[in-house]
Length: 274
Picture 1: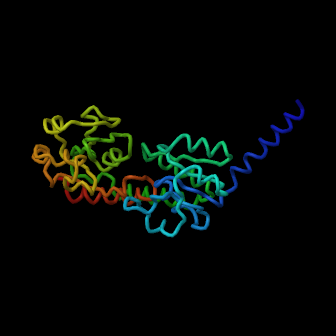
Picture 2 (picture 1 turned 45 degrees about the vertical axis):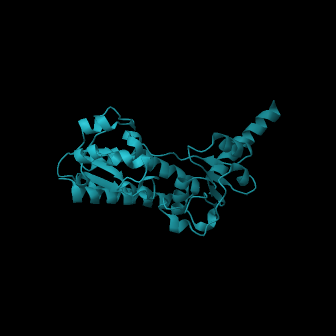
Picture 3 (picture 1 turned 90 degrees about the vertical axis):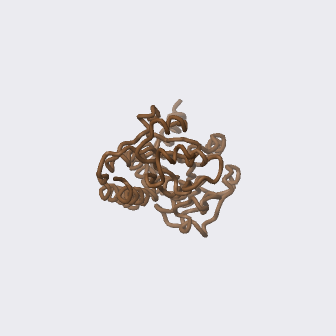
């Protein structure tokens, strides 16, 4: 019994020291954690990033170029000497459990459902990385962009965030919050989709929003996924001049891209909303 208590005391004493030691060989398995990582720490501390870290949808693709890329498989990480692994919430649970069972520390930053959650996440990750100053600088950049865009809409027009095949994220992301911040009225709640979901073409045409917010890559119908967005009936209900656009590389991942996404959305609102 005494031996067990002694071992437990040693373990409890050691845990805070481990948590406070900034990791020096960090692996990222996810496009979004790639971007957060390269924004917060020196390149010399990044052991590898995800295999899609530098594709066309990566906001910090140029900054990530030249860094080692992993295969994205948990088994390959077992051969590294990583002292921290950053993973996404939608990746394989089996992979994450495998890494943890083998003694790897794994952090899983999730998508933001609010800006307050985003600030808390940045602080949590930057604290673990020993990069508090860079984390606070990123938060300050987000807050500055918010201040520049506060209540800029000339009238409280309704806006629906609409994605491929008729999906709207509702308040599961931060776009509705940003629209409200700029003085606009998110339309997802009127549709009964406050938490997101699919909206039919018939419902959109019968009761259209004033404006639609879409991805930059959806300016024309190129496949079945984008066909609904440019159906003639919807074009008549919400014509091109009442459509706002944001590049996917600014919205797929929250974090370093967020101040730029806010500024880009504000520019669209100033240019088009009447």
